[in-house]
Image (cartoon, rainbow, N blue to C red; front, side):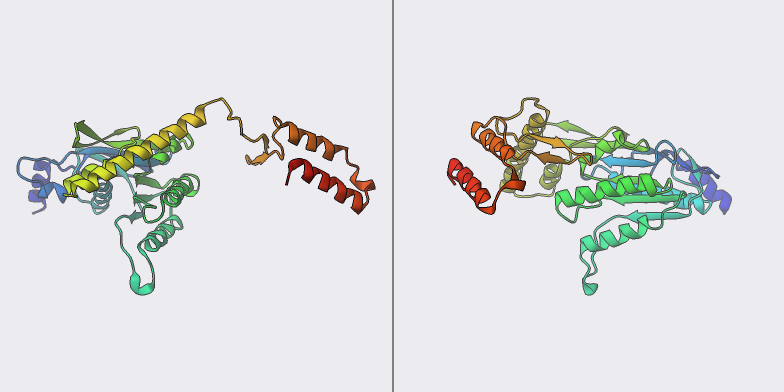
Length: 323
């Protein structure tokens, strides 16, 4: 019976994984063992490579469009590791897998209303549990962490989680699927964080999902395209496209403004403190009236003034300002 299963596994492009004591995961042409059996006739599951270790590529930030296959990649990685741990064949061309003690997953959206826990609260509780129990032999799969709250809150939390796993996660191997493209800059900050994306091909307003991951991040989610595929009414799509274009244009202007070396006329003078904060100046030096008031304040001998003299000086400055 086992011999028959082994022959069947080989015929379906399964392999016997190599298990060792390393702290790495190296899967070549891995596939999802369930999804591939449900593919329509004539279609084949697109395999992908996954490599993670504790020294060079500990965390993968995986971006890409909705429905492109990010979640499937996370799940197939977990299933391949689990099958390998049980001694089974795995759906891959080859696999070299170090022993894992835990597989942590935070995927999907659930709530626990009976206990007063919202979807986002459940997400945070489960993620906190993961972060408190990491080890060097843990596999962590995080899917869209932070999407249950405001954009800035969610993105900040997601960024903090990646930083924590890198700095305090003891080398836990992590796949982090996200639409927060701003997280791509973490690759330049933390040496063991690498960016990957799921590729697509655009043909006019149509998008072809290639479902192949490549190195590098991406800044497109094609959410409106998915809404079109779902049959969303045309006025909704048209309004969404107008809004998206306006938001993208405003962000582009902000980026251009940030890179422009010319300082606006009304920019306040200040100095950068040791902690990185900016201490604004009380006065704009290009304003003659404020320069005059500054000079008057500097000339006052507060230690030798009576309260009445201080009051008269303050009243004079108020009259000069016209307030």
